[in-house]
Length: 168
Image 1 (cartoon, rainbow, N blue to C red):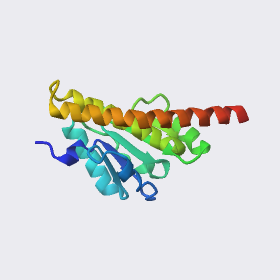
Image 2: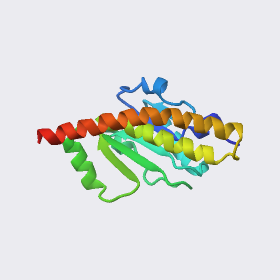
Image 3: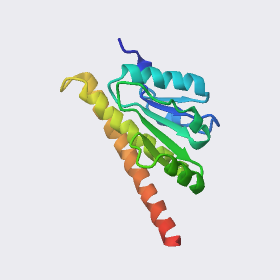
Image 4: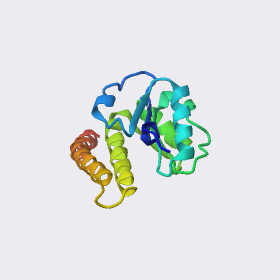
């Protein structure tokens, strides 16, 4: 039997404790933030063995040594590694070239990618329920609400990239 924690498939290791505000901005039924690695890894490893839905594990480059190796689950877990600067981004991209399990990006895009993962999970959870059911409608409504937020973040992300390219 699943519990509420079993649906917190979007897990965020935040050891510097810089993103506490995300707990208020994101859906707590699927998002869980940890500041300590041990309970976080236990949560991720547990989810990978019971969930048939992809687990999204976010962690900063400074905590990359805390990622579970390997993740022996039944789902296709995704590790999202956010980097504090371009040098770290290049180093991590070189460490994991072409590895589909890793998504590596700059920290200034963290909220965008978390929102994207959240919508993906809402869609997958919606599909688990019969058409027209209360649960399906709840997940669909949550997804619609977050799509609007993602649309705004996406525009900000694109504008920032265009600005960077114009400066180069």
